[in-house]
Image (cartoon, rainbow, N blue to C red; front, top):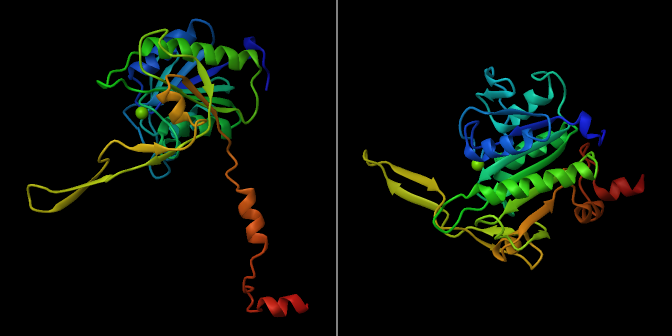
Length: 269
Ligand SMILES: [Mg+2]
């Protein structure tokens, strides 16, 4: 992949929908410096994870010279953007700016992160960018815009690399309020009473996933702690989920062979 900026082609997407303010801010800021194109869902797809639409056709609507909406998931958008919808293949994929954090286990459920993962799977360098809401649930995008531009510029300056997947979370507040940047690892969510149960008007029970605000556990080096301390959190992620320790444990298993031979018989062979 070439690090030359004159060959740079940035695909912008999100999971909040093509009209979300976070995506608009990102588009306006980055398109002033680089060649960008937006391919994003036509409606909110938060918490859609890595869902891919296989059982019905996808419709694309061109909203502008470099703006497309898709009636699908964030993963669908990146798949189309990297495979045929556009005149050339993007080499940098940026997902966000998400309205809400994507910390710790959130990355498993997040449509924002999934879009970045898909871009990475398809050969591009990828960044997911999320803004933590303020206590009154507000989203001041000005600081997030500055951070996004700085992170993208530094990513480009270092040369786009294969398997580059970065998860960025930005604390709430006006420009200049963040204390700085902190490289972090994923923490763990702990959900308390996460399922709300009640009865609908027809007397049938229903369940609502969410409940109380989740807490977190983990050390000083986690993304949760970075945000709690007022820093921008930078967490490099990887696609390979293989657990090397688990591989070692499995080497010691004595499974029955699928043809019926036990471990002892197998050992005699
Ligand atoms: Mg979202």
